[in-house]
Length: 410
Ligand code: AMP
Image 1 (cartoon, rainbow, N blue to C red):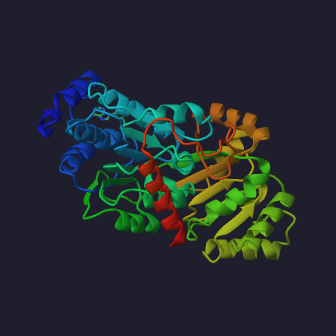
Image 2 (image 1 turned 60 degrees about the vertical axis):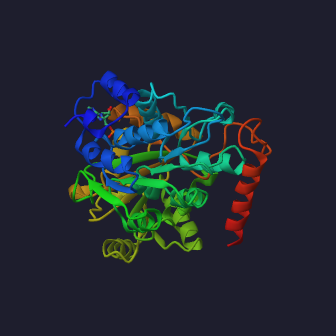
Image 3 (image 1 turned 60 degrees about the horizontal axis):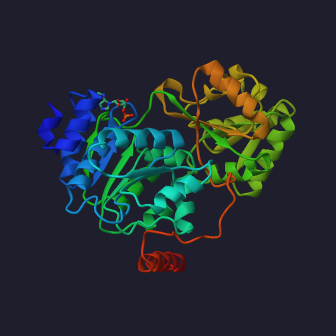
């Protein structure tokens, strides 16, 4: 099997030859012909399988072979939504590599950095936009991004979107997309809310899977939320409200902190108990028993109290406070992802904890992905919803706002 067999055009084939790829990976073999055929697609595949090229190559082919491509103002015709800035950058690099002879333009946007270079490039027009959900919504609301001309929508790592608390943002973006479009959804696992989203999003989708089980990932997924200390509690509540079926162990640095977090969660109607050494033995056992049998979904514990906990199906560990000792971090996240089950470890990092994060990354030899979220403060001053200087016409602008108002009224 070679890439020539897909009937790709010269510019795309030339770029693929330059990358040194000779044989399409299994996900590419399955997905590329289906996407070229303009089918919606549900892909079960993890990072590392070649899934980026599986959607990037046919997207570039479709956009570049369309009549009039590259002429006039460039409207966004393909949107790739992905959960982390690291993935967004990686995907952007892949599009740049495979698309370098197509003449198509692409932009990447993500949060946590000044929006100005991004909005400046967007005003010049782009064919392909790669984005994280928070920054995309923000710039859409400010009137910098219009998706009226969208032809292809790729939702990448859908399950991580859910795990990281972005699913509502994703749904808001989807409400702004034109009905007539091709949609490709990729997810390593298929939890209930994602298969419901897939049902509502995809029209007669073709299904491709490189791991037919499509249910577990073999390692713990990790992410960091940069957040002000005062916003940690609302961020925790936001994440926990995404999916009430999770079993989450929240780590707090102090006993007092664990009590306060649990108390505030209960106030926010999220049932939670704290677990620490100052609690009477009977209360600790009661909390642990309920957590084990699934009646209690959220337990807030200190390191010492959590030491003996061995619970099946613990899906999430959340470090409300980052530990100052890297080994403690490794120990904490090891509470999840047991026996081959999927595990997610999310950490909140405030200004004072940045040094701890650095130590953890150094000790574990990794760079934990930093993700966007609704409680991060923009580093750049917010503008007063300026109109783009160039680009979409006032009619498109008005259409965008009319649709938004309609959506708000429903
Ligand atoms: P992904 O799963 O998209 O993150 O891709 C994983 C890695 O596989 C990336 O480094 C790609 O450059 C590489 N890759 C993708 N497709 C191919 C291919 N057909 N042959 C060789 N390497 C590939």
